[in-house]
Length: 164
Image 1 (spheres, rainbow, N blue to C red):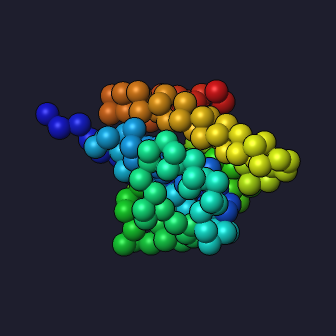
Image 2: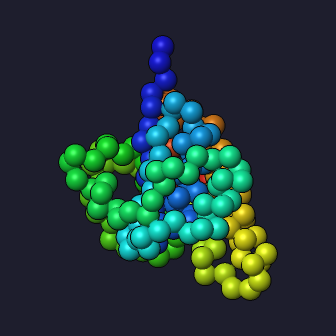
Image 3: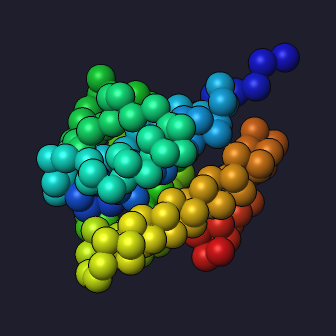
């Protein structure tokens, strides 16, 4: 019997680092069970070079990663979404579009590495920490028996992951 496949959208305001990390991590770690995308409410128009550099160093494919507006995922021609995860507090407070497929959502707050000031090493460390937080949460998410959980149980588990 074939396991179901799930489509996931990671959101943050600028779509330049955290949501991009979510997309890249889940597309690699989720195997054939998950297909991930990312978007922003006010996309910066570019993926931050530190984010691209970190993903490359960790052997993630970076071709095709781009900063895009969340409206790309709000039309009837968009992929039907199963899950939407906000990874920044600003995006979590914004009024989101109506997503096709009525996906389940959760907020997984991750500090914004783009706003960190300091030495280059300190700034790069902030990117590595954001990546680590998302990788741990995605590992917990991909280990869930999604198909066998009822909606309320699944929602509770997703919220718990966001608090970890």
